Length: 145
Image (cartoon, rainbow, N blue to C red; front, side, top):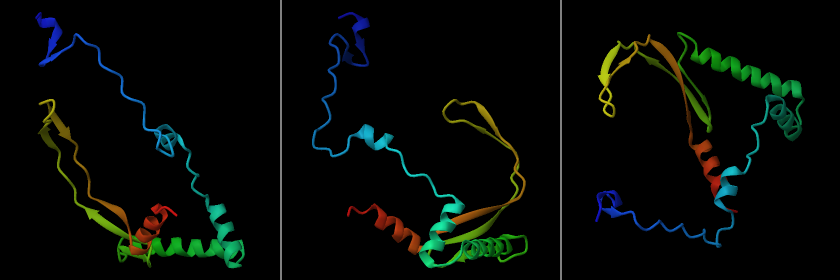
């Protein structure tokens, strides 16, 4: 057998067979699942309007609550502040202080070339983690009805 027809132990003389068509038992095709458009995230104005109509408050009152919440978060995450803020049952905002790093030279394991990671200054980063209430809300939304 000539060398050109063998490649890594397989014979290339026969063409590959096409894949069988997808099973007809699926309710939604794969193409539709990936191309289906999601709803856009609501704007601040839409959120304020929805809350004001559902709770019987004016838009100005709801907007002032959002502004007050933003001020409380600013106070909590500022330099010298407590560094943590929690919205009970939904999320917790924590400030993490990252130390400065030096410039390092490492070898890329894939290309075996030397790379340089730049030095980074000390910085404060904000981490937001979900609490049990939010996790349960998301889990309930995924269950079929």
